[in-house]
Amino acid sequence: MSPLPPAPVEAAGYAEPDPRDPPAEDGVERRDAGGIRLVGVTRRYGDVVAVERVDLAVGRGRRLAVVGPSGCGKSTLLGMISGLDEPDEGVVDVLGATGPAGRLARCALMPQRDLLLPWRSALANAAVSLENRGVSRREARAAVRPLFARFGLAGFEDHQPRQLSGGMRQRVAFLRTFVAGKDVLLLDEPFGALDAITRAEAQDWLRAALDAEPRTVVLVTHDVEEALLLGHEVVVLAARPGRVTARVPVDLPAAGSRRDLIATDAFVRLRATVLAALEPPSPAPADPGRS
Amino acid sequence: MTPPSGRGPDVRGPDVRGRDLRGLRRWLPPAVVLAVILAGWELATAVGGVEDYILPAPSAVARALVDRWDSTLASATRVTLTEVVAGFAVAVGAGLLIACGLHFSRTARAALYPWLIGSQTVPVVVVAPVLAIIFGYSLTPKLILVALLCFFPIVVATLDGLATVDDDLRRMMRTLYGTRWSIFWRVELPAALPSLFTGLRLSAAYASTAAVFGEYSGSSDGLGHVMRQAVPQLQSALVFAAIFLLSAMSVALFVLVTVLERALVGWAHEGKRTHP
Image: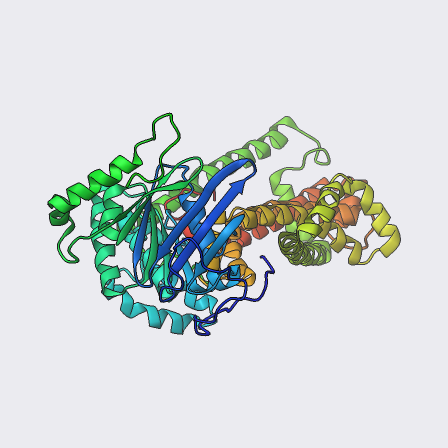
């Protein structure tokens, strides 16, 4: 626990400016309706630079997908946005909060593995954040129960996690994240542990769920198609040190199934762009402005 | 605590029918072994003409058990059982408290853990007479002895269990309004239960041994006291009867722990074979 300066915790109105906010610079939009903003963020582990001078901006209610090879510091970025970790340099602003406690109060993290508690039913797992907030067990479960149908999990409320398929477990894990009611969802390779077929299904499902219940989302993945399907913008990171090498706005029709979307010319072009940006740079120093 | 409320509806349909048969298959072989051993023993003492004070026949032991129950064994069993159960309870309470304390405080862990391990290098046989000198023939020295021997496996197992929780899980819970306390209560403690029960089962096996050590070193009643008096009088059948009662006590404690484990952490054993 970091006993850092008191930051606005809980839903106390997200707009109060933090006095520690540095003045705006380098063209990144200031306070764009309270989204997420990273300015010059650097994080080291010993001598290893995990993330170097990363600038990111996500508007409120928008979805940003971060792709990159393993070791490019994707998860490190999420850790810093969530307030679980602090950057060594730079500023992380989440809906106006720059202190770790304030960021933590605004973000919910969904890790790659579902990490469901094996001694709790699916329903009790999904309700855990409410119990953490002091809601009684019975009320928490009653509040979450109706959501199961909305998230395509009807009938699985009382199943134990081990009785669920990988895709179902991941849905429950997302529901658990969603139930926390945070404005910002941080998804760390949410479907990385699923097989290709289940993953395609899960991507379709998540896209529909997020279209129905818009949140500010930062999705980290190494799957380019997943990034394009779920993100409004795709940011490409290079590895060692993690740096932004490309920003690709995604302009695809909102509706349409995954299969149809993937076949469109626009999607194919976008995928080619992102894949090109992902290619390791030539031995010469990488040029940062290739997009 | 979040109840791992048993198994819920039994999803292993075909197994239900086979349960009686499986129970039989599980208990029959050891029962047969026991019967063979007892029969061989009885036969050896009868045919071989072994003196009764050297090796009493099982029938003689059974007779001693019945004949001496009212006069000697009943009260001795009550005394020893009290020592075992109360000592075990103290060990569980102290063990859990210490484990949680060490889990929450890094400083406490660094300062106390080496001494905890050090405490186990002191041979109990040596401590028992010292405790008898300090506390006399009362219940207290036996309680201390049982607790001393039993708490260590509980502490180590619980501490291990609490530490097994995935750090990613802790981090995720923190973003879901998880405080240190709620993470402990909803995640770490339930996750530590299987390990805790392993420690409890180990301890359960030690408890009666420790009680007898305590009684050997100074007591006026109890199964250890009965044995200490019966050995010089060459009442071997009585000694064996006391041993039988002590074993039965250990087994009962062990079974009790196992039943509790089944009820509390059924989730950990689903689809896994456990030792009975």
